[in-house]
Length: 429
Ligand code: TRP
Ligand code: SF4
Image (cartoon, rainbow, N blue to C red):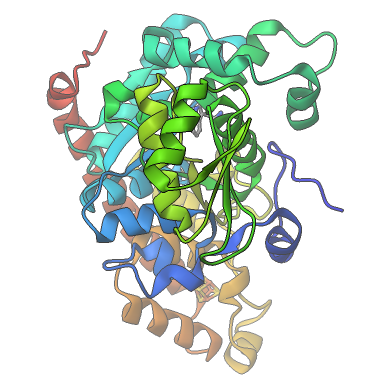
């Protein structure tokens, strides 16, 4: 059995295990239903999900849904962060509510960043870039430390979390500082809070993440179940028997559920037949809210593949040559592309004869993930590369120029974003 390490890298060869061993579903199966799939979806960069159907159904039927993510303000925002930002923005464009947390409590407790550094990095690196990439006013942007709804909720869900469970996921030991532990619950509260009454109540919320983040998602889904008053379970699939259990729920509430679903009331549960699961769940949520419960839906997630570092290996904030920062000087970004590892052969002769290997090429990855929007154009690059008619020198120059232009344009938009902070309820200081 493989364990997923949230802070380690997941290799491409291991992705298939995620489906079999961890119960992540294939994103491909939903692709046909999505109206304007994002390039990460079309290109299989997003390869997996948990209950994304709930988000998609809401999107298709004009019901409320949301996308949320958080960024730890520890250093420079780079192309990996851009992926998550774009995924949030895409959902906002499809009519969803957008939430973006700056995880300053986590950065302070786990990485020792001062509050001042957190504030500056949060605004300058993450928020300005997210707005420059297209996040629109109406999005909820907040710093954890200044946001009571999340802090209060983290206390509440903390009742259902214990040390053994958290240490199994995060590797806590006896000398882990308590605020570090608290910050993991704050992250779960980040994920669940869009479903609080004051933000419109229970709804499908998607958290776009890298595959290594699945343990956090599973923890949070578990906390959502445990914090709810009721547990709905399908005893027989289809229109068979559905049972609603509520051990700690008020008797009256359980009675109400029996009444509204035509179910049979027992001591601690109701049995219902001839109703769909969706139907029952929505009645249960309604009643739970009336009786002061949270009625959280389990948060959904999508999983994307990682980009390789420009020098091969991992893309990591601690290795400047491995990534391109969104605030890197355009010329420096272009230079990093020129120095990147390619899937080219050792000699030009071999390249012409055998063709290049775009699947192993970090330059091709830049085109695929970020720089070429048109699928046909990208296909041409791929074909020319494997056909041996494209040579790496020129290809790098082409990519470097696209990168230079992207960074220049992005940074101009960041300057414009500075003027828009007020519209998000934020200020520079
Ligand atoms: N822990 C995440 C990180 O290390 C940041 C984070 C905080 C987050 N809250 C979140 C991510 C909610 C996704 C959803 O970068
Ligand atoms: Fe990579 Fe381009 Fe070289 Fe192909 S030609 S291996 S895509 S750099």
